[in-house]
Length: 372
Length: 245
Image (cartoon, rainbow over the protein chains, first blue to last red):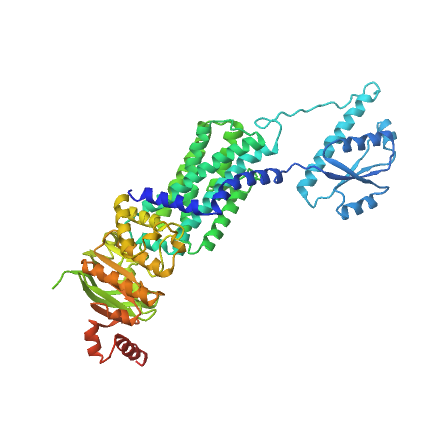
């Protein structure tokens, strides 16, 4: 183990000499948190609304006002026919058409059923679904208001079921609160995976690995000497990211920091093991980058960061059992938002210990000081 | 008869169907400067990498410093110095940092490394580059530093793979002074080159053509045998011999 401190010192010296890497290590957490948290926001605002009001009554006017008074809709035009309004959708000027039928107010007063039509541009189906949902809520609210103002004939009861939701762990359903822990997880993963996967390859391309292979250094020392520096960097970047998350978004860790770091410590060893493994089986930095990128994208899409993973098909669920990022994103959210204790994440922890051992044993085995 | 520190017995290496080294047999005595000559692609580097424990032989056997290269490559590595054809110091570290790192890997103490480095740089007239980034130095200096690095842990045997490739004649001459000094101290030198004038400086040379050793003797005897005025003539003779075969 006498060579170990020398390898670690050497790695840190090289990182500190790298004019691009060092600033990036600290800029990345800030930029990624800001960009991803704001941009990867699924809240739908600024839905462009076009109205076709054939009724032109005070009742229909109240409905339109109800729409425009919300933060989500912007009234961009009124037309006399649905066909004309459709042109606005074709021109991408409008997302939603609200069609109010002729004589709506009269029919309502007669307690006859009335059909209000919503036409949605579903090119972006997610946005359309959310806009439709908002619209239904607004129409429902408008209806409820209407009943209140009405003097109902005896025997007719107004529809007054009022459902109120209470959201736990993220009470305001703040999208950023949900995204930030996941983004921190991705950030630390990408950084350490790329750094480690390129590292040994770089020594090979530079020719320096030959000099190490001809020295009495052991494989174990060598791999460990490569893992420790990046492990420390991963820990630092996560700490920095947590501070940035607090300063920018006021997000704090509800659970124990110790549990979070304990998991992170094992997780980083696993991810670095994968990186080093890639580094030992590839021949050029380009190959290593490609494979790392490929793995990260697949792991990322299945991680549940952007989409819920409970609804993925069975085969993908099985694949996901081997996805370290999925475990980490879950654990980050559990600890940061829900305040889960070590006992709650013990299953995740054990799986990660397994990954760490398997990947690193594979990495040490696949690295050979003597080529066959 | 002097102690044999390198022995090679029918050492061979195949890459697929291609035989890079074909049943090479030779011995090197302690303190000898052994030249390993051959054209590009003759198999010199492959043979040397096998002797250093960097490449597993396909068949045959070899011992270096008394250890078998196939079964005890890590023991071989403890006893040799190696300067690869490709420059292998970290360009983004200073000379001192490179030596501290490699010295540390060999288990040398910091103080001992600095002392030895200062001494070696003094001999090379390169004391002023101690704290320079390696990447900023000219090639000739880098080669001398690589040689010093290979000698840092005072190995009994040193392998030099084309140490003077791309280096000017004056630096080459200085380089051979370093080699002579090392040999004088009892270090065995195993050196590959394709400069035939350098072959004259060796105690014995082997000439490799297409993976096998075609001649092995002292430069003087080789010149007599092949009736040539210089090693260059010997080499031409051997190379032509195979090309017309």
